[in-house]
Image (cartoon, rainbow, N blue to C red; front, side, top):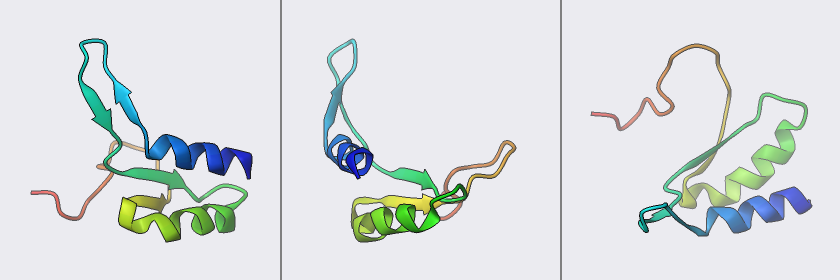
Length: 70
């Protein structure tokens, strides 16, 4: 539970680059293919509007998001 709370606070944060630019996380994926898929889904599902997604890791050179790419 502590790790999920820590991740949730990081997702809402701002990060500063070395040259002073402010960055925010626009989207985030958590691999649910491991030992705790129900925990990952329980975390990601209520945060979908914030673009936090449960995703399945697949080896190889593939795009992260295949929909909405032009």
